Amino acid sequence: MSLVANVGEAHVKEPAFIRALMTAICTSAITDIISEDAFNQWEDSSDPAEQAGKGVAKTSVVQFFTWLHEAEEESQEDS
Image (cartoon, rainbow, N blue to C red):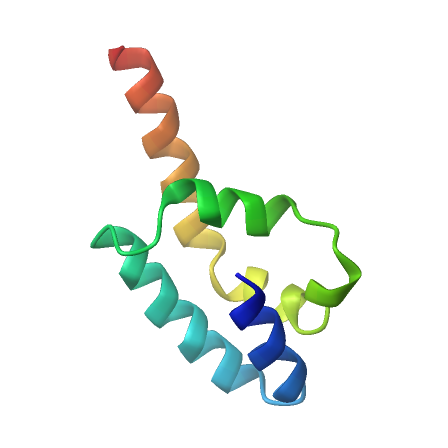
């Protein structure tokens, strides 16, 4: 997810760009291009290099992370 951090840093003053980027990335998760673990690691990361633009990005995808966490819970219940 360092790509998101690098792009986010370059466009930190462009929230619309970050929202569009995060939408594209979340769509990738739905189609299994990016693993759920990668999203969870990025969400939980406190790496200073990944913080620029992260707040805008996370705000843009609150519904996605809600869906992701609910899907994980359902998967664990089914196991």
